Amino acid sequence: MSSRYWALHDNYVPNRWSPSRLASVVLTVGCLVVIGVLISIALTEKSTAKRNSQDLGDHDQVKTEWDTRNGLRDPVSDEQSKFVLAESIPLYMTYNVNATFGTPLYKAWKDLLAMATKSVDVASFYWTLTGDDIRVNSSTDLPGRDIFKLFQDLPSRNVLVRVATSIPTVAGLSTDLQVLREKGVYVKEVNFGLLTKGILHTKLWIVDMKHVYIGSANMDWRSLTQVKELGVVIYNCSQLAEDLHKIFLSYWVLGHHNASIPDPWPSEFDTSINREHPLLVNISGATSRVYITASPPSFCPAGRTKDLDSILSVIEGAEQFIDVSVMEYFPTSRFIHPRRYWPIIEDALKQSAFDRQVPIRLLISCGRDTDPAMLPFLQSLSALHQPSQNLSIEVKLFIVPVGNQSNIPYSRVNHNKYMVTDKEAYIGTSNWSADYFITTAGVSLVVSQDAAHPSSGRQMLQEQLRGVFERDWNSQFSVALSDLGHHPDCSFTEALRKTAL
Ligand SMILES: *[C@@H]1O[C@H](CO)[C@@H](O)[C@H](O)[C@H]1NC(C)=O
Ligand SMILES: *[C@@H]1O[C@H](CO)[C@@H](O)[C@H](O)[C@H]1NC(C)=O
Ligand SMILES: *[C@@H]1O[C@H](CO)[C@@H](O)[C@H](O)[C@H]1NC(C)=O
Ligand SMILES: *[C@@H]1O[C@H](CO)[C@@H](O)[C@H](O)[C@H]1NC(C)=O
Ligand SMILES: *[C@@H]1O[C@H](CO)[C@@H](O)[C@H](O)[C@H]1NC(C)=O
Ligand SMILES: *[C@@H]1O[C@H](CO)[C@@H](O)[C@H](O)[C@H]1NC(C)=O
Ligand SMILES: *[C@@H]1O[C@H](CO)[C@@H](O)[C@H](O)[C@H]1NC(C)=O
Ligand SMILES: *[C@@H]1O[C@H](CO)[C@@H](O)[C@H](O)[C@H]1NC(C)=O
Image: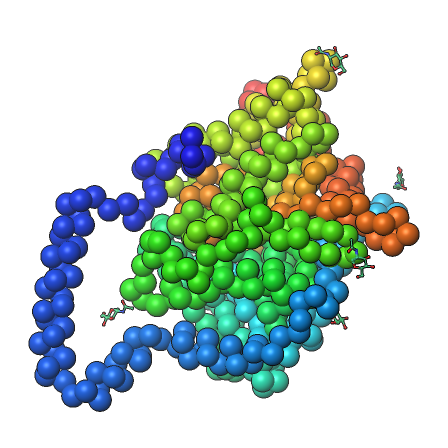
């Protein structure tokens, strides 16, 4: 079995051309060539040249500008690379006094923007950094407004800013991108609806081609004060930044109205950094093996590990424990119709728990908007939990209290998407359901580190991530499925009540 995408592959992966379709395309292209020749005879050489340069779009212009600014890079060997876990904890959530947290995401973003001297490249599903963008009046949008202002100021500091975002979008009312354009930011809306029948769900930043951010947060004010987010910033790691930039560019070059996905991708998008050959670097004082994955498969040029393959590999590589925190877990498709059963991750988890007795803990989000259809799937996993048989699969729900913030739609949820095992840390941008690995664009970072020298006093990323998981798993916000009584902030309780009747 060469690819584990088999289950939905044949039906859903686009761009598989049948011979008859190919023939008609060849015919069409032939006709277009003839028409093209006639037209070009009719036009002057000058106007033809002008049209061609417009067709290339601003990609080449921006690329040249960018290459010039980044031409003089610091030598890689001198780099002091560093990981920082970045977290957003929604307002009015109180943990135990001794709880520890990653760097606040707001601070991490501000630091990155303050550091930028040459370029900032951002891919995000959508931009809504002010309350006005979603017609909500809340002073909790202030950090979002602040970040928005910092982005607007970048071009005047002579920093080249490029933003790739999604069509379709969920931010129809937002004026952020219009404002940014007026300030000199280059913006491309990439039509994943047409390209893959999906969305651009990736959330990544690349600063000065050496610092990167990957995580669950969109460019949304709610991600700074109302939604629980987790991501990672890696400072001073230009090899990783250059690799992530290839993924950014793969969106950027398709940001024009009649784009189609190259097959195969030109070799400039290929990578030699992947699951088989991770980048070996000294990060935060520890020898680290790191690679970046991409989704969907049609956005994985030669050498790029597919997001799903990395998830399966991390699960299969674990020996002592597998801890997972994801917003949504469905062993089915969600948006691809007809909906299909898709047990690929489910099987890998059950197999590790049953065949290899690796204990599994799943921390899944429940909020007021969560689809109650998820509950039976979680119950069926949890039903396998039999410690006496050395079979351990525990499921808890993480519920962010809504409190007096109920006027803010699509907030007050745990948006995290990560997994930590005794061997590796995985930080991603995808929910765990079929769509995110077949049609939706996403990225993830996979890291394993040798133990840091005890005298360094530094914690490895895996340890930090485990700490975050333990903190949340043992917090007052996590509820075992079996203990879920009535809870006003979790949509499952109504479903549970109905089953009980
Ligand atoms: C943190 O405090 C709680 C009680 O407030 C205690 O149960 C827990 O063991 C403490 N954890 C650590 C790591 O000290
Ligand atoms: C927003 O709320 C604040 C205080 O809650 C109020 O002073 C202000 O007038 C409101 N603005 C709008 C546009 O409703
Ligand atoms: C990045 O490396 C430079 C030295 O090359 C150092 O001055 C700077 O503090 C480092 N940045 C971070 C965030 O560690
Ligand atoms: C996009 O379509 C226009 C006609 O609508 C055509 O002139 C142009 O060459 C196309 N561009 C690309 C990059 O395919
Ligand atoms: C990693 O770099 C730190 C300095 O940042 C150095 O002290 C340490 O010895 C290096 N570790 C390895 C394994 O190269
Ligand atoms: C569970 O694991 C323990 C230790 O590995 C072993 O002694 C025991 O026989 C196992 N129990 C079952 C039911 O497999
Ligand atoms: C919401 O509740 C928190 C405490 O739970 C309080 O500090 C805050 O002022 C309240 N906000 C509003 C708008 O009522
Ligand atoms: C994950 O799933 C939920 C429910 O379908 C959706 O609202 C959310 O946008 C999805 N993606 C993210 C941001 O994780």
